[in-house]
Length: 266
Image 1: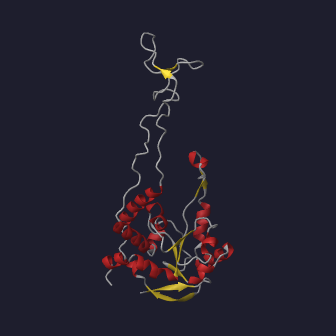
Image 2 (image 1 turned 60 degrees about the vertical axis):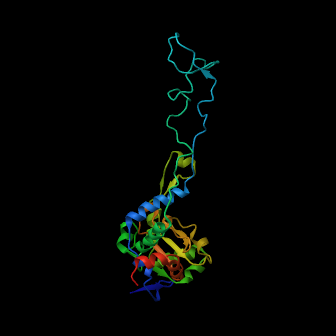
Image 3 (image 1 turned 90 degrees about the vertical axis):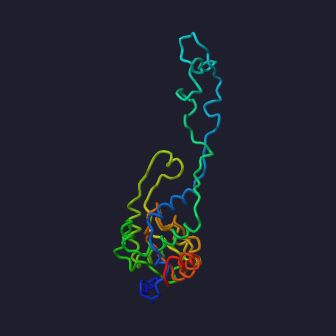
């Protein structure tokens, strides 16, 4: 079986033999579980100040005063107001998160490599790509393989025209139409804008493509040497729309050769 390779003007430039990485069995359960495990590696441990709510000038007044047995401020203007305990204003928090909480989940290396290879195979399944929500009606082919000329584009306006020719632009419009503004602590911390995920570009050598794509909403760019479940299956859902640059498959097959030998009959 052969896959077509397209030029940056949308013409079929030639064909390549189907990369064996697309014959890896697709394990959706494994992809989803390993994504959440790998996502924990990006989280920062957090905890509370050990004396939060406790470093107050308060004491228990004793019995016989007709007052509840809780610590109270000793000095004016808050004398007699409850402090320290969880039910008091400004008191400690009960069941607080501790820095010792284990949020970094360990992953078996072989299992992770199989999950990434399986996620790559899922990007070549048209049904999974459509089920994930991507608009692929105008996409030239799934999987979409483009010549290495794409790596040399370093202008956003030029890349925009190429994406329109390849039929990927409607999916980027879907990302633009999904923008929503959220409030709360996320907004304080620079995460006010939420939007969907668009296509992923996997390259061999960066000759300008990263610079060209960084300002297009929803588009991610990653090297074939670093592509992971975070890129291939955002949220743990396999089948992302991926633009593969022609020269990446030897690198990927070398990276996952032990998985290929074990799971693919060649």
